[in-house]
Image 1 (cartoon, rainbow, N blue to C red):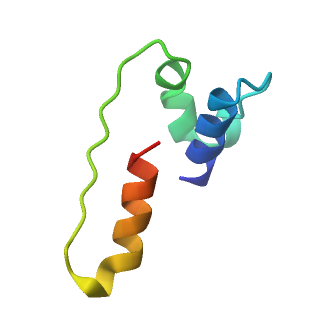
Image 2 (image 1 turned 180 degrees about the horizontal axis):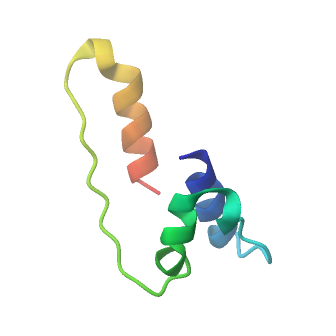
Length: 64
């Protein structure tokens, strides 16, 4: 997921190099990240207080 985050950040900031080769996932999603496709993020979260940190992290990631 870190490699995906770095690719999204590079595309968002219009950097000259986007590190697609860091993972298989980013290589597969290259067209999507280049803006040649539409996306939909489905985030699975819980209301359990014991899972607050992962839930907030998931919501933050899905808001990209």
